[in-house]
Length: 428
Image 1 (tube, helix red, strand yellow):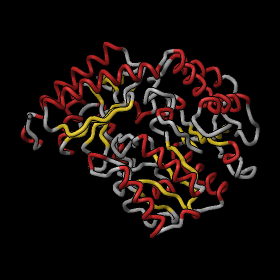
Image 2 (image 1 turned 90 degrees about the vertical axis):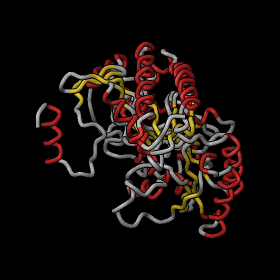
Image 3 (image 1 turned 30 degrees about the vertical axis):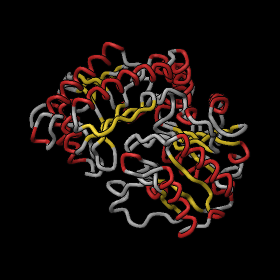
Image 4 (image 1 turned 180 degrees about the horizontal axis):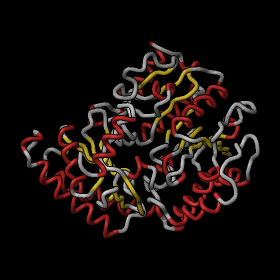
């Protein structure tokens, strides 16, 4: 094998299990804002953002400075052993802004799955109930509890044996698939009739915008009626904002687009600009349900990640990234709607701020566009239960000229791939 990337790929295949798959066959050497460079000097515009982790871009100077300053002080003590002020201050900042009912409290962890698991623990402690209801095509993580909550078998659950009990799946409203709001609510009633009594349900957990499921946005009416249903039965409502949080949708949290509030919110990914940090925030009386020592973790709320998160919140406010998400989102959705008029192979365009997806008739076409875009210097991700959706997760700090150039590449790639009979689609 020739070339540095090829050699590293050979080493990777020999050293790592096949379960740790990779999209790219090239290896990153450095990154800045919305640009990646590989070990052979080629560059890409990053529309993947580390899977929604880099809303503030790669190596934002404000975040680098904050981490460096903390690095000079201490890197780890374990908050539950020797606490530090920055953790408390970040919780105060989150509490002031998180859209939950009443006074809020926040606890920090390391990963999104860890946040979701702890939200379940908190909900069960607060309600003294066991049941958890999630939705089809949801993604909540790769630990056993979050795999059980995830509404997709391959590759997340397949081969891993029985899932934890007391998890049930309702239908998520999806007009493209013919699932109405009434259908989704009826599926919940079916669960209450056939599988678990509502008085045994601790929480209903859903993504306001499904991530891996294809960027489907929960309708406002659905959330309103879900809130009423939860209140009727004393069930907690939990929003999983691991992917949708921190300015991606044009608001700090996607739940700010809805008139109702939830009881708990999970967050991670862009919270700390690339550092591993997650959180659960929620109603104070609910968050206080677990006893002392019931929440925590050795690395939970690592001081370097906490410092980065403080800087992320500063950058979002000072650079007006919520407004920037709306502006970039309007430009991209306009481009995609125009493309949908040109190509019958585009079946839907979905967007909330800069959380945007375009769905194609076939997964082969989405994959072809993804691969050709990579050849042209643009990194894209697919998603959806059939793999026929391309999602856009560019840094909100991307320079306008680079964003414009990326759309030019996308236009050329779509023209090439949609017109190619080998992918099984034809131009309108």
